Length: 203
Image 1 (cartoon, rainbow, N blue to C red):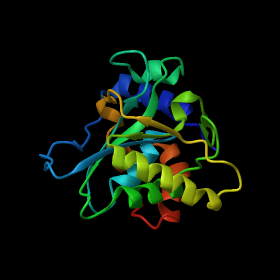
Image 2: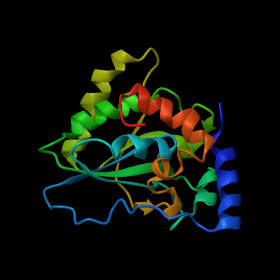
Image 3: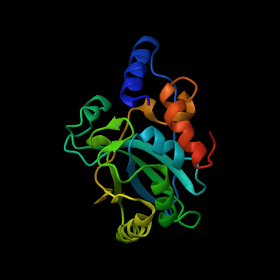
Image 4: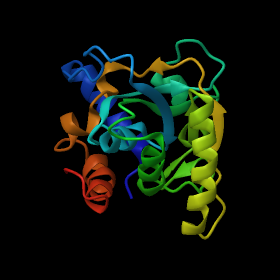
């Protein structure tokens, strides 16, 4: 399977030669005060974003970094695995359309929560499975969801459950990545497209 690091190197070389590709802003509209925010890490944030931005009730899905000790980290720093950050997607959603519990259900089905600091060929602490809760209610729902979905997996769920910390949006070229690069980057075709097909989402 194609490693995302190898694809990222190819992408960065392309950016250096051609300039940064344009990307659709995924956080430009005003978010109603009744909406909630939940931050999830499930390996490569390109994959997680591609899933959650399609779900009805999700108003924005922004790729970024959370949980580390370096302020304003760059993708290159994160990729070294020494900043403590996890690749995450900050999800803003309407709880009257889709609940946190349903989001957790998509989360468990969208990645393997039983592999420590790894998703497929993407390995390192930045790829940890993580739930960063923004409210006590989300924390309670997350614990209940972990307990409920554990029976679906042979191995123990190793997902980190932590309070939300400072969120650092990833560089612009990471945003809306799959939609903008699915015909260009082999990682999208080999890893993300099959995942979306499995989940019966738009490819």
